[in-house]
Length: 287
Image (cartoon, rainbow, N blue to C red; front, side, top):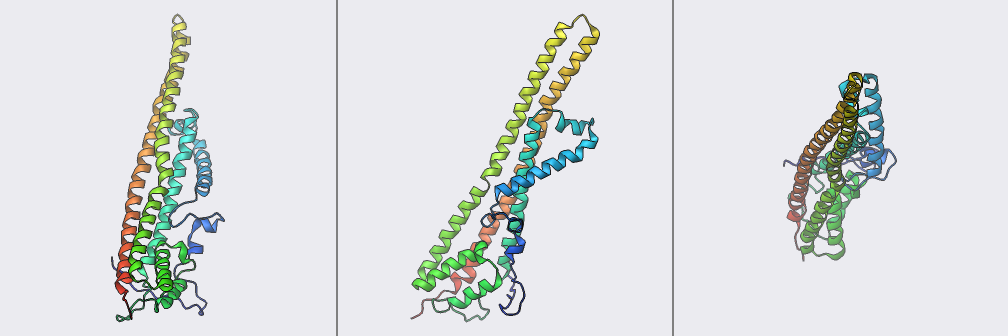
């Protein structure tokens, strides 16, 4: 990756930091406790998903009687749960994507002095830490800077250059584990949504079978047979359309998860490369 140097603002010039986490994090702006790094506050995502679900049904209500509107409003209770969980997963992925975009900005900024002869040691840590705190309003909320601050603080306090690389690798393993955990809820939704579709199928088939018994009872009355057959077809529509909606939603969400997870894996690799280039590569043991 091409790391371009971006100057950080002076703490006395009145300008805002290059990485303004306070304004960039949507959860923080809305008054919710933000998730760590690219994690998402599930309560915030759930509230947004509920509002989007209400908005979705309000948007299709004028089209009541059409195939699309009926597929969501007249196919049993499972459709409402499917819509809510689908929006919930989508909101989590969108917020994660926005957080990831912000985290990647740290890779474009050099926090080390540009002097080729600069050597990182216990005696030269403070200027680097000062530059980090000038660059970001909350460096601990930025994965890359949090990793570097922990490593450099250890170097300044203990003076053990050899421990910096192992500490950075340890944080990298923790960040990767946190990444895997952050997708657990979405993966649970991907599992639950098709199950809701199958439950809708069972309910629809039960309704169709119940209506079919009415057809048999009305075998001598053509008008009653016609009315009973309408109930049979409605039950079959519920059975098939609930599964259709659930499978399509789960497929789209899973594809989005794969794409976003690939982006996050690449980010973690680039963050590790950044640490090796500009932190570990500048370390020297001085007398």
